Image 1 (cartoon, each protein chain N blue to C red):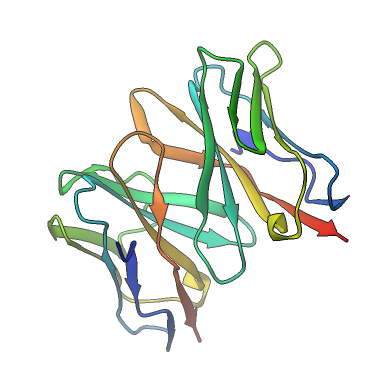
Image 2 (cartoon, chains in turn green, blue):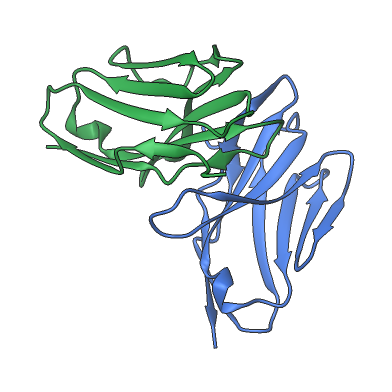
Length: 112
Length: 113
């Protein structure tokens, strides 16, 4: 199994631009998570889906952030418009059951 | 509001010795705890977990201890190996929102020869 696949690995964009991060979960996993890691706040959950349905999006910082999971094999996290404070590493993870989340390698986002 | 705390940002240990990582939590409703390990430029990888109905869980060189009355858990790595050098995260969740893992800030472990 290839694991959780995230793209791109690195993204540099200008403030105000739209950014789309992509994730392909492990086949058969029914839960998908988006996390953000920053020096100030550590690893924080943004949103998670169960069977493609958003369950908890209380971690999404602002309306500029949105996430979708149109099918079991694909999810996107979009930031529009992006701001410098959105610079972070964004991780996608999937899980077949409670707890054992498998993380992707992350997308390092830099907004200048 | 940080409900899971790892107060030691770093730990240095000699190869072959025991590494003990500590984690405290404030929410007594947490009922499932996990440890993850993270290498640079990679995502965290699951190490070991423990349910609140247990006080110990062991998997090879890794043992997690849970002290519910003290709201404290620890991870023991015996013996420590150079490949164990990484950042270790403690995480906790609630049954009714199990997908919502709350992570600690992490402890950087360095295993020296």
